Length: 91
Image (cartoon, rainbow, N blue to C red; front, side, top):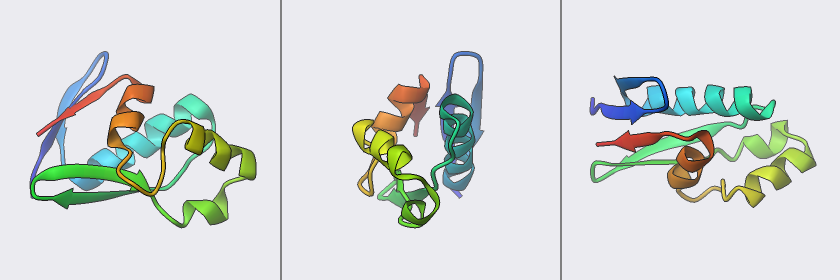
């Protein structure tokens, strides 16, 4: 299982793709007060995080609009999520 390094303001830690997805979901929820479902994928050693389609069934319209405004979509949104949360992920 490939590990990635997560760097934020106060922490540096290594984690799997699934652990990173869970960390991003929780961090996003703490910052914005709602919890989208993300999905992780590893393609050729590159980590992708994108919005899980089940999110559309659990969130309110205004929350979905907020995600869209932040460029968090069903396409790779890792860069946008990291920017919003003030962290970096390295291979």
